[in-house]
Length: 294
Image 1 (cartoon, one colour):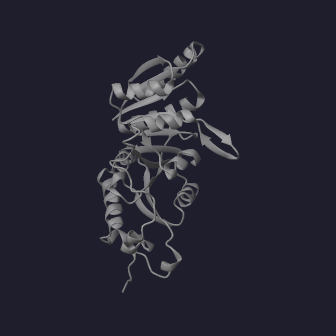
Image 2 (cartoon, one colour):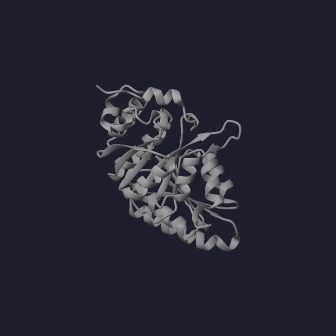
Image 3 (cartoon, rainbow, N blue to C red):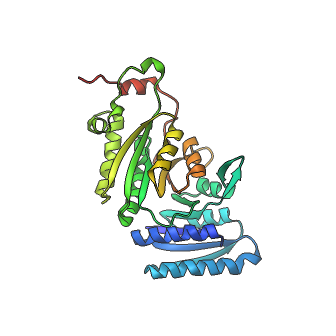
């Protein structure tokens, strides 16, 4: 694994660097420390921060390449990820208050949208990962996220929970039982959702993740995921994004964007293998899930 840890010399970037170093040590990764100063006056503070990061990595027996650039951070990070292959980009995400809520800075948001590799956005004070939540849409496009999250979880000995949220069906179907009401029954079923969640669980186990569980929730997707995060004590949330063929950038769906903005823990955004299906409700898919048990 090759990891690019980005820094502007800020306190939040150093926090992100510490988490990046923890992941790098656990995964025996190669590391590049990329420092970008937007003005000449930042150069010394930035270099000092990078050297502290380099020392931290050396203490973990990781030799890190150190690169400094002057210019616009987004352009320099995108340029670097095109010049060399990286499996993970780590950034510190500064959050700012806006009408009572917290929102990621536009700079961090643009980095997540424009770089090709997965991005680990660190907005809080997380320094290690013991519990991980993977938000699964129940489709195979999430495999990249599951695989990368599994490698990190294996290295850190972290427990993983796979979460899938089912939207509430229209009232006309409220009396019909759903396969998804019982997680165990679903994982044994041959429904598309059951097959895909079982595949994700088995993929994690095959990677060496010891503690894997699947959890289902019903209701508004974002609300249910946020409730799970708040009550689960997670250090990392894993979500996905899709490539826009017309724009040439990555699209954060409504749920992924809100998770990055509102989660109090680190968020890993991984590129999907193909664009996810639209979140529009499908009666056909719903009817495919409705069963009557004996």
